[in-house]
Amino acid sequence: MRIDSLDAFDDALLRAACQLEAAANVKARPGWQGIGTEARMLQWRAEDGWLKQLHGAWDGSVLLGFSASMTYQNEPDTSWIYVWVDPNHQTNSVGTALVAAAEGSSPATATRFVSSAYRRTSAELGAFEQRFAAPLGYAVASAETVLELDLGIWTPPSPRNAAGYEISTHINGLPEHLRKQAGQIKGLVDAQAPNGDLGWSETAISAQEYAQEIALWNAQGSTAIESVALDNAGDLAAWTCLVVAPAPDSPSNVEGTLVLRQHRGHGLGIAVKTASLEAAKHMGTVRRIRTSSDDQNTWMHSINDALGFVPVEHEALYQKSRSTSGEQILEG
Image 1: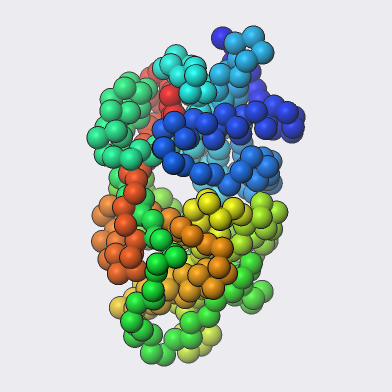
Image 2 (image 1 turned 60 degrees about the vertical axis):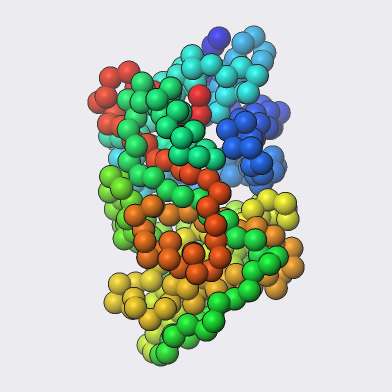
């Protein structure tokens, strides 16, 4: 077996890697459906503020698996490490070698490595941690539950109190004058919500980055549905974004939801999420919607319960210090 860098602009090679990625995900998460090979290729190639380093593991000309190290320009101290191994060649040795390559290619600014894994049950996650993650030095930093909503049978909840606020929904981008505020709110989503031991900092995105993200989703065939609440001054008080998948069989995903602290207690969280769900239902092609949040985020879980979301998967986020010996992870 040899480990080499993987050229994301080699069409045949990246296509093979994306197909392998999908197969590995289906093996770990039965029933999983992604956004499609071509859309995934666009994502790997996007100039979106992420430094991406890809490596492949080969046996001769056979691609056994590939890994990615991803470091966001606004969070240079953290590198996300991902590994996918062909289900026909899954051994810890392939996964371990790819983890080492991913970690080794991360920029020197990265002081920690973070990754994630999904499984149907917490017991399956525990087995994965014991077999693969923990021996490589990764510890659980946050536990999340993945929820799903059947939009076909969904009915909106009773109107919630949002007196003094204007709720509106926008397709494929907010008005220009709201994009800077939206970028600030997006940067607060992870920082202000419970996130275990991850300790995320505020990472606001610029209006340009906001536009680039919308453009990528559109290029992939996805549709962005954003619903916001404006206060009496016309400023953003709450925001949520739902990304509608390009294929009806694939689940659409809630990108994030946040109500600014000074506006909490007025039912704005459920109001904006309901508005986005109604817009998605009106499209007529959206069947399933997924979301997730830290298990300690009781506020968001209460909103999702009220909207009819039900648990379908468990997710664990792992981290380790770069100084940890035997640098290595994930999907082994």
